[in-house]
Amino acid sequence: MTGCLRTLGASLANRVVIPAAWVSGLATIGFLWGMIEFSSGKLTVEGRQLFLASVSIFCLAIWHLIRRKRRAKALVASINLKEGLSLDDTQLLGYPSPIFLAFDLSNKKLAQCQSATGDYQIRDFTWVTGWQCEWQRIDSRVSGGVLQIVDGAGMSVPADEIRRRFIGFSLVLTVADTSHPPLRFLMNRSAAEGWCTRCNVLFKC
Image (cartoon, rainbow, N blue to C red):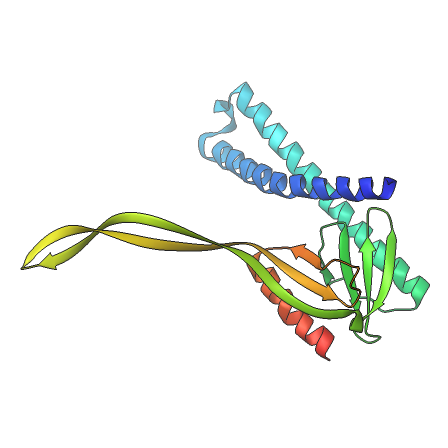
């Protein structure tokens, strides 16, 4: 129970920290540009407080991400030492989530890791039976006017346009254990496509 709570807490922290790092970083850059462009003397007390708050949030977010990266690398190093493996700590599927996979290409082994608790399981590559990139497609209908030439005159006629967006990309691994649910790793589109290509190399070699 404690391990589940730790993993859940770490996952929620990641969902908050990464956007906070982006927002506070952009805010800090904006304040710095404003102070350089208009001089810091024109910055109000409230503006200075907001600047200090954005810098503090940005530093805390970066510290959290660095700490999580070190913890993940330390766990992989510990597994390598205990199990005599050569897991690659530079290619961690699922990181910065507390639940991730590390791969040993030479021994054809993978480790399911939980950095929040330090638990892990070693699997053979044959345990993974399939992998695919999944996403959600959103179609929206937009109505508007299109200029057409009719008998030499321009006129606007109604037209419907379908706009299609793809969101919620993830890499899904299916495993040989029927009682084990598929492993789903949320990520952006380029990362999902990159990992799908990498899985072709890992599991087909």
